Image (cartoon, rainbow, N blue to C red; front, side, top):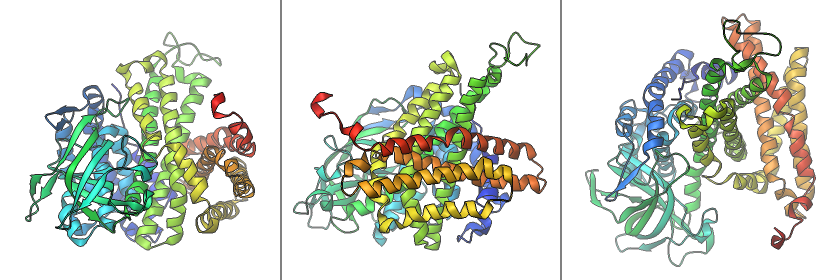
Length: 593
């Protein structure tokens, strides 16, 4: 059975040594001292380690069941959900006006990593509710907020997002779900949605569905889409659940992974819906939900990699096989532990360097979201918008790859269910697909985000990297060589790719779009290079000041040097692919495949 230990020490390092949260000037961050964040993370770790992680294989084995229209969640899920509610975890960063604790999104992100690593399928129930809460909070009327948000903050009521239909996924302009206006100002919602996570389950007393639909007579395509609140139970005047709405679960998907989460077919048969915001402006409201969800999915990707790495490391230290080529390391035993072998060590270092770099990247992204929302910083808003497809696409690609590397560490044992690694592989796989496939993330990055505000935000990123290097260059020759020079080279590769797109993309869009996926990865590696340089700087400073935990910081520096030397040079490969243009990609006619 797999194990999980929350990485609270590493999280504290990021919060206080790298991001230096207390001194950022972001409203609410001044209260985030080490003692406070340590207490929050410590309590979350107990729930993750002691309650959620043991349920992960249970949820995978049992899955969900549809019985007489009700989805039954796996054994132990309801009790665990009650514990999560009692601890106030779902409302950690929610508005105090509706019962939330009002903590920064960054803290919610750290807690969310623990819960996702421990039990990704379980944590999705509250994650979907949080996204629906955000959309209503940003775009709902005062009456809608008062009606739904307090119960969603506590997770007494759940929430979903309903986009995909059987005939369309990414191209939402093709949706057929209709919203017929009624005399009382409501709408009758009719249609079918598929792949709806947490669409029906037995852990909450009501579920607030956010549904995309078209009002007859509206504009064609995405310009005619509106967003509606469609509760499972209509709400009485006193706020209690009332009559059952005409919405039902028509079936459960049989899936590769995340078995503990109910992935539903949802049928709307003239269900009562309430318009959110303006008619035909539903995509704007839904993207409030989707942008947070995409950052959350990026977190899921590396979180699965992180827990898989923990189990691979434990196995590598325990499993004995063969002898070290440099001499016996375990003279009392018949063989040495496999961690002595260079190829196993390479495998583990790939996992470790990615997961720690990815954690720093997501924490930094969360701090940008807080700066944008709490301080009204438009520059931070633009930068995190640019980085969102990178966080989602790159981190889930590499997160899945990391679970496979972890599985490989175990050899044949990794292929069996007993050790649990194959579940992490299966669960991580969905992160590359939902909330917009990673190919769509790459197209969004190159086709939309790079040119936003005249390229202001990507140029700002380049200037930030350049400024970081200039500020710290020359202080330590080894640090320059190990961290700053590789970062500078990666940044130049990223700029060269951007220049190629600008020169070719307007006249021949295929030239840019053929390289979009490589650009997303090139950008991701550069971001992790920046994170490792920042972490290396923080550990170097701690060692110079005489930290009481020298081993932690020496390990951090060694891991960073590994990433910069062994992983970051991938930017050159991605640049070469981009500069090869569209010809190799588009050479074959469709009929020739």
